Length: 395
Ligand code: AMP
Ligand code: MG
Image (cartoon, rainbow, N blue to C red; front, side, top):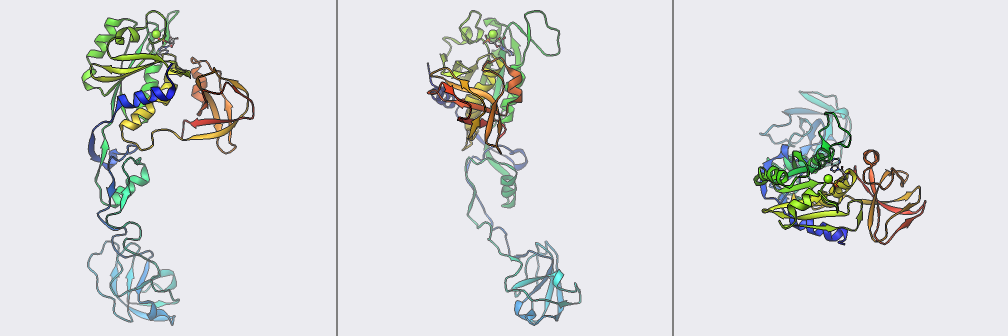
C-alpha cells in the first residue's frame, strides 16, 4: 500500500506545470503570478496632498489666524504647477501634486475656504498632510513574489504600479470522465438499479474552483471500447484526464481494464475514504483515476488533485491551511490509514462536530460539512474532547 504522501508526490510530479502566458489583469483573479513583479514607479509617484485644503509654507501660518492670497488652484490630475511664493497659499485637492515651495497642507476645515484669499485659523507642522513620493513603494521594489495568489488587493497593487497584464500559468484543461453502467443523467427517469450521475458535475466544479478549466465528457458505461473511443476524440486538447469509478477490485472495472498496461499504475493508498487510486500517463496525457463513490471522489480531489492543479498553476501555497480543534465525539479510524472525516468546524469556539459516518457514499453529510477532520495513520481511536487536525474547506 502506498502512503497518501507518496501518492500525492506522484500526482504532483505527473501533472507538472502549464506554460507561462501574459494575460490582462482583469482575467487574473485567483491565479498565481508566475514571476516576481518589480515596480517601475514610486508609489505615490509624486508628493501629493492627503487632504482638501491649501498648500502653504508651515512657517507662514505659525501666527494663525492669518490671511494669505490664493495664487493657484490645484485639482487632482494637474500636471503643470507654479512655485509657491512666500506668504501665499494655493488651493489643493486630495491626491493633487504639492507645488514646489510648499512644505505643508492645511486642511480646508481650518480655513474659511476662500478662493481669492484664505483665512487660516490654525497652524500645522511642516510636512503635514503630504503623502511623500515612494512612501509606499520605491522604484525597483518587488511588489508581488512569484507564486503569490492574485486576489483583489494584489490586482489593485499590480494596476497601481502600471501593469496591464501579468505573467501567469495557463489554466490546465481537464477532461472529466465518469464511468458506470448504472449511471443516468440527472433530469431523466431512473430504472431500478440505476442512480444519478453526480461525480461529473461535482469534480468539474471542484476543478473550476481552483481556476482550472473542466470539460465533462459524457459519462460512459462499463465498456472498454466505448471508454477508449470517448477519450480518443478529446485527448489532444487535454492537460489532464480525471476519471471516476471503475478502479476497485470487482469485475467490470472499466478504467482499470482500459488503462492497465497503457501507462497508468493502479494502487491502494493508505487512506479512508479513497483507497483505490491510479495515476500515470495515457498516450502522453497525465491521468488521475479517482474511486467512484462520491465522497471518495471528492476527498481524493481535495487530497491529490487540488494541490496538483494549484502546483501546475504555479501557486506557492498549494495546500489549504490546517487548524487544531476539539472534537465533540469519539471516532474510530482504521489502523495504518489516514482517515478523512467530514465535520462542521467552528473557528471561533475552536471545536469540530462530526457530520455523518465514515461511509464514502454519504454525500449529504459532505454537503453540510465545512471541513475534513484528519486522523493520522498512527491513530485509530480519538476520544471526545481530543484535539484533532481539521482542514477548512471554505478557507
Ligand atoms: P466503482 O468504483 O465504479 O465501483 O463505484 C463505486 C460506487 O460509486 C458505486 O456505488 C457506484 O455506483 C458509485 N459511483 C461511481 N461513479 C459514480 C458517479 N459518477 N456518480 C455517482 N455515483 C457513482
Ligand atoms: Mg463502476
